[in-house]
Length: 243
Length: 243
DNA sequence: CCCACTACCAACCATACGGTTAAACCAACC
DNA sequence: GGTTGGTTTAACCGTATGGTTGGTAGTGGG
Image (cartoon, rainbow over all chains, first blue to last red; front, side):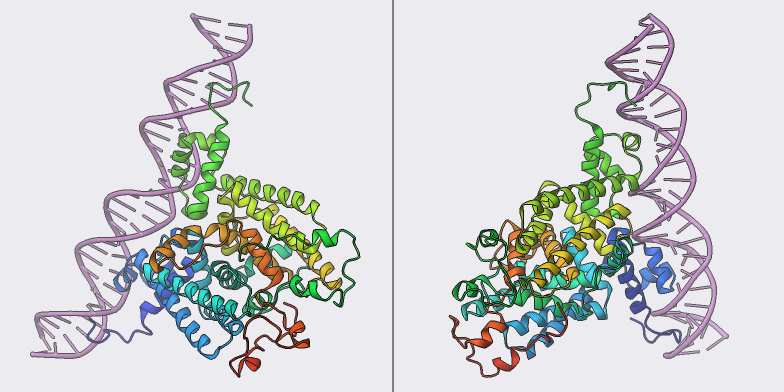
């Protein structure tokens, strides 16, 4: 171990290396990331990088575990205040949004891993995600048993809440590009994706759910069923199994 | 051009090469894909690959454009039958689900591109995605003006519908792995993610939207507000701007 | 003043990778 | 049977990449 630092060295090089690595990994993926480029970004010699942190794989592992730890902490903090299932769902979305704000590279890395099958993910990271899904399962079960939520599969919810929030953060670049090709009329979503995602998931698109609509008829604001076939065509989704 | 084929050659090599390439690209990403590995998978010599299809970049472009063309066609077909906004949303989800069933590599490639900023995407592909979002915008505006849907940002909807559907298809591998670490109690979502996603998005999690709930009080099935603070804590989402 | 020890670096190495080439192969046509 | 021309291949090439090495510089302790 270092007895002290040999030189007045500005800032732990390990941190700047990890940061640079994280950005490279986020932009190019694990396979695409170049160790030389990481060293260049961090402003250190490549050998220093190996000296301080280790090889490419351990670099990646450190970045991932650090990010997962952060989202775990944020999630626990965010959940502490919430007592309702709605509040908890929003808190989950907010935790990942906050992660994306603090460490913009993390959502990309996480999504990439999910897509790739998690082969490069260390087990603790996988386990952490598992715990989050479990948590969501419990929230859903409790809320469903109290009649607050409809029965919904926790994996589906997780994908939509967490995946949706992270995709918002991550796709800003493509959206810009797409907008340049198709002209202006695509409005940007809210700056805070967590709210947008959670709100839509909680309330749904439909102004009135069918269940309530069946009881009292046609008291909604819009003109609704002007087209004659709408009544039949409205029945799109078979509602046997839970979502 | 070939006058005939020189050898009784089983099947166009171009097709098997493209398929092999697509799978490599899906598994490792563009940077991570190895041309030698693509050739090996396709069972052809590497030089043959260059002779028939071209270099790595053009290989990738062909795969992407082919996939985008397929989803475009499927989407148009699916939409033709639907007249209601609900039906159209489901049709969009179904089109991407069908793409993922027919070409399992496509969702991975598309998601990867979205994450990476679309830098390797050919313009026609970007434009196609732009058109889909435009379409969703129109659906949302019409439905909102008729009072069927609440006002929602089309990008948010697109991310949740299309992203959510593709993430379902793509994360099966990680889910298996996570389940092995956390034990059984994570139920798999439905086999048809399009339905799960669209249904949840249309109806929402909450059994009763607040709007309707405010009018007649506490007629829901569950015990509901046993905790005294739930009434206040229920107000999580500021509802100023459209989702 | 010298030793031991950490921090650092330029240059190097082996391999893997994308891409090319020159020659062989083979069905069809004369 | 020989020529033609698309098709296939083994071997090759230059470069980029992950990783290493031998050595230097600076620092605190003796």
